Image (cartoon, rainbow, N blue to C red; front, side, top):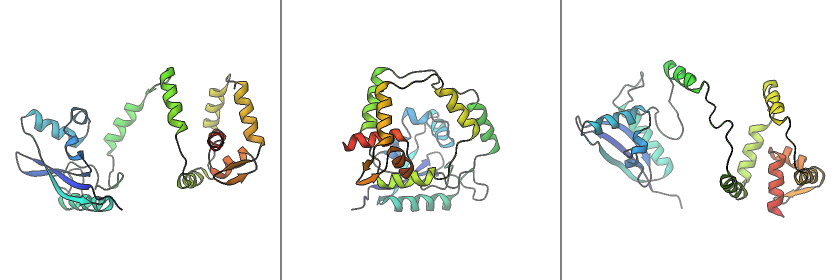
Length: 233
C-alpha cells in the first residue's frame, strides 16, 4: 500500500502575512528549518528565517495539504511555487525564497555567474581529509556497514549502464599509477584475488567464467565480486 504521510507546507512572514517558502515532507520536516543547525545553512531561505527570528518575529508555519502520496506532494509543491513565483526567477517573479520550482532534484535551478565564481574560489585548495587516516573504530564500523550492503538487480543494471563504454583519461591513469606506487597486497589478499580471477563464480544463480568475467558483466570491480562471492558462500 502506497504511503500517504506526505504534506505540503508554507512559511508566512508575520510582518506582512506573505508566504516566503513552500516545501514538502513527512513527520516534522516543516518545523525542522527552525533548528539551530538548519538556521546556520547559508541559503536565501535560512537567511530570511534568521533575520525574522533575530528581530523577534516567529514565522507562521502552515500545512496546506496533508495525507498525500510522494508523487502528489511533488505535484502540489511545484503547483504552489509556480503559482506564487520565486524571487530569483526573472521569468516568474514572486515572494518565495525557494531556489527551484520544487519536486525531486534541482529542476529549475540555475546558478548565477557570481555563485559559480564563489563556489570555484571556495573549492580552490580544498584538501578535505587528505593525509588523514581512519582510526581502528572507524575502520570497524566501515567494515560492518559494507558487509551488510546488498546490490539489487536494479542497482546492478544501473551500474552496467553507467560504466558501459567509459574509459579513464590519461590524467586519471597517471594519478592511479602514482597512488598505487609502492603499495603491495598481503599474501592472503593476493591469494583471494587469484582465486577470484581463475575460478568460475556464481552470483544470484548466474554462473560466470571467472571473477573478471563477472565484474565485466555486472559493471562492478573485482573486489565487489569477491565480496559478493564471500556472502554467497
